[in-house]
Amino acid sequence: MNVPLRDEVMDAAYALGWTVVRKMPERAAKMAFAALADRTWHQHGAGVKQLERNLCRVLGKDGVDDEVRVLSKRVLRSYFRYWLEVFRLPEYGKQRILGRMRVTGHEKLFATLDSGRGAVLALPHMGNYEQAGAWLVHSGYPFTTVAERLRPESLFDRFVEFRESLGMEVLPHKGASAFGRMAQRLRSGRPVCLVVDRDLTETGVDVEFFGATARMPAVSAALTIQTGAALFPVTLWFEGDDWGARVHDEIAVPAEGARQEKIQVMTQELADVFAEGIAAHPEDWHMLQKVWVADLPAAAGAGR
Image 1: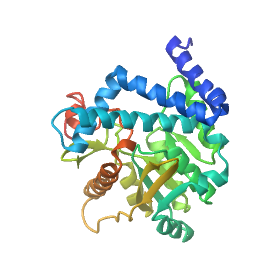
Image 2: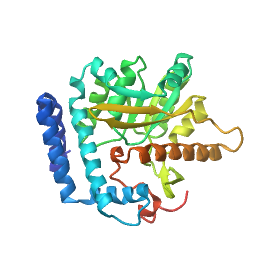
Image 3: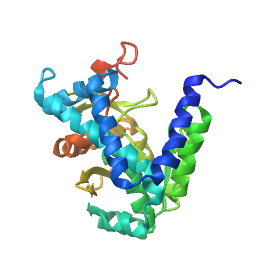
């Protein structure tokens, strides 16, 4: 099968990132990616426009104004920093990853895992969750995650190889098959990490998020109910040249209600914690896609 030219270009660009960018002097790489971020912001394409619509909801504004535009520029700088660090992360040593992580609340997570109970770590698209994953592995807790299928297949393979090189187990995003394998890992006492502030399955749960209805995946709550694992929300951000993270309190399974009702309650609690973290660090929420139901196509926006 012929690979479309656009896919070939995308794959070549990422390959370049993991070779040339990975080996560039750090100062030069930072300047280059900041310039790329600013150029992308000035072009004001569809992704930036959606980002600004999302930020309007976070800030409680009816439309884009100067404050939103300034914030969106900061988000682009943060987002491109994430990509720069993705390309250079294999060069970071264990000491740098552990020593420059400013994390709170991890003691309860480690205590849970040390007791033999699995844990689901649910994250939004904030900060650098690849680095956070490397931090968790270097702390002695290798974990399982899933990866969205990318085109071309070679690009997906590059991301899987990258994450596995950091000590992660990566499962393709394949519904029931991936769910069953994650459940096995949780029952064996391992952590599972999932980024769950945007629904990719079309089977998500509608939640209130910054005062409007958004759709988020049900998988974190479903795995917790199925396996008896603990569910910990985690929010991430950048602190100067370092990284910040907070492991929030466990979200408990409700004592009463049908399974779907429990999933709804737990996913809403997740959304509330995510909103708290995003409101504290809006410049580090890298959401250039549609999250709120009002922004989705009419068919996708129908109630579940």
